[in-house]
Image (cartoon, rainbow, N blue to C red):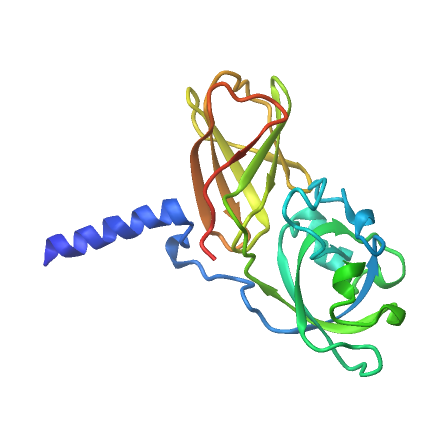
Length: 251
């Protein structure tokens, strides 16, 4: 019986590292949380081309897999970029003239700067036009909504795009499942120890270590405290400008 208990403990410990189970029984903050009142507008044109780029650093939202299900967040929600990658479910409410039934799920990919509805302390979502039209008519312009945090569901693993140059490794972290918003990243070369990275802007994380010629591993921690370690994601012959795929949070 004692051996069985020991094996179960070992198995759970392994799952913690591989699958991003919560360490130390940390709660899953923000998953299907309470509904909160806000407002929504839209931008970017009918094809959402105007949403590409943005303050989270994701670049081409289509090639990154986010598509048109995206939103720019007001100051109160953006959290200086730490909310980048978080997922929200929205419903249009209390405006039968303009609201449409159903809900949408969007990813935070941009910042809506102060001015009008995006002024603090307003909770506001500036949606891509195509996704806005799933919950409200175009002519509405602005509608009241309710929103809540939900799990992000992604295909494939977390992606690490390495930019910069020697002694300045700038890693863009995308396609993050679970909580979606990354709050810390550490990097390890095959000849170095784990080193914390600093957030440069959006979801671009920086290391000033010389890591050329070493295979690279990453430890990603999301806002809910869950962790995923991706060992040797980039091979020793990695190069700047390339993207490498690691593990993923369980949804």
